[in-house]
Structures are given as C-alpha cells and as structure tokens.
Length: 389
Image (cartoon, rainbow, N blue to C red; front, side, top):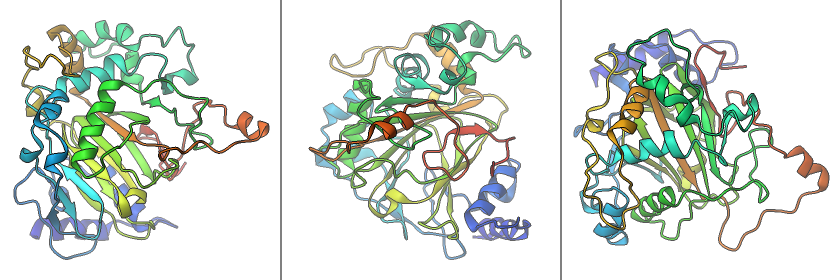
C-alpha cells in the first residue's frame, strides 16, 4: 500500500498538459519513468502470489477468475504447448468484468515455438507488415533470411545498421486490418496460421468461449523505446467474442481504462508468456502500452525463455522443433524487444461483411497508413515521437 500511495502521489505531482485526460496523464507518467524506481509500486504484478491492490484512485482489487477446466483436454493443451488448464492461475479485477489475466500457462520451453513463429514465419508474405509501405514485395519477401546474419553478430557489432526484423513494427494475419479505414474486408484476407488458431481456440475455450474462431491477428513488435497508443478495439463486427493477447520477450506496462478516457486506468505488468483476455464489458475498454521495460541485468532474456524447447514433442503437436541456430537469432532479438500477438474473431456465425459501394471499396484499399494516438488498433511506434501527433 505504501508503494502504491507513493506512485499515485508521483502521478498527482505530474503537471497536467492542456486538454489532458486522466488516461493520457498516466500514460505519460509511465512513459517517462526510470526503471528500478519506486514509481512502479502502483503496477499490479499478477505473477506475484500477493498480487492485490486496495482502495485509492484507479486501484482495483485482484480477484480469482474461474476457468472451464473440462473444456480443454490435457492432450489438446499440451498439443498447443500449454500446461493442463487445472494448473493455470487466472485473475480478474474488480470493476472490470470480462477481463481475465493468465500468468504464463506455457509448458517450459514451449514459448520458443511461438517466438520463432512471430519472427520467422508470420512475418513472411502473403502476410502484411509496416515495411510494405516503403518497400517492394520482393524486398520484404523474407524478413527473417535478410536479418538473421545481422542479428547473430549483434553482440559483436553494436554500430551495424538495423536489420529488417528490427524495423518491423506490426504484421497482420487472416483478415488484414486496414489502418486507414479501420475496417476488415472479405477482399483482404489470407489464410490464418493453423497453429495460432489452435492455440487461440484452447485459450478461449478455457475462458468459457467454446466455438471461438481465430479470424484476424495483429502482431506488434516492440523495441525498448516503443509505445502503443490509447485505443479501443471495436472494428470487429462481433464484439461478443473475446480479444486474446499473448506476450513474449521483455516485460511491459499495460494500462486498462474505462469506456471514457477521464477514468483513471489500472496499470499492470505483462511478462513473457502472459495471456490476457478482454471480453464482455471489458471488450471495448480503452487500453495502451506506455512502456517496455529493459531487462534488470541490462541485456538478457526472461528466466522462462532460458529453458529450451523439448525435442520429444507429441506427434500431433502444433508446436514444431526450434533449432539452436534459429533460437540464437530469436534470443538476440528479444534481449531488447517484446512481441505481442492479439487474436480476434471478426464475424459472428453466419455473418457476412456488409455490402459496400464501389466508391467505399476504393477508399478501403489498404495503403498501410499510420495511426495516431487514440486511434483504435493503434500501431506500435517509437516513444520519441509526439504521442498527440
């Protein structure tokens, strides 16, 4: 309580900028903090057994969240690289019905597969990424192959040019989100990765959402100076299904607010392997990532990523072997980075996209434009840019 009060006191002393709301003020506070200071005392850490907050501005008590253990067999959980659901810990927050936080439920070593997929496979064509705006399709054909040699010598050559992988900010999967029109469309679709779909289906079922269909994904690639602006994910046509979020790599601070930005948000840590589910009332709440935190030792990996992926994978597992050569590249990248996968169902059962006029269809042609702070489905951007631009 003492640390939380001190943190809230620090926020109160931060000068309010003209027109600044409560969410934006806390966003700016955490964006500017120095890691290792007492200013992080007000951030919930769900991985700690004592994760709980009392009363106070923006404070919410951590409560247990019930999971549907019988909805996912131990076989299917292991097939996705997850522990049996009976061993998961799940929490909610008073005042945020439908919000579920699951601290790292992955089996030891199995995060390696999902990290490798984000960096090596999901970044490939025909998936869409931020690099497409300034480069030809041939130039971005295989981001991994063009980057791996550079990342392997990262420790030796600190002044080398950044690789394409290090310039990656986002990738879209399935129904590709149009950053300008803020819409999905039937015309802009590529097959959704089957392994990620299976993982998402198991997590959704464990949280009470049987029949969830993974139809669209946005992967965000964070450097240590990256932020994710305040936004609401409302572009999906069916809001009755949850938004799933998977985090890997360095820890970050996540802010979960209310329907209005004048409501003070709640701050929490997202560590490697953590899963968040936003459903029901919490599905359409403002949220943001103001800060990615460097490893306490300087450059290093979270402890949970030090365990290698087992070689004796189940025969029908969606998880594939990860060579030490591939992990060397992934490890080099993650020492100063974080990757987040968000998965969503776009359409309700038997629902189609609404018909659009020819003029609307022309306007909706994706050109991968930039979004501003406050736009929904906001892209990851560098912290040095003006968050109000």
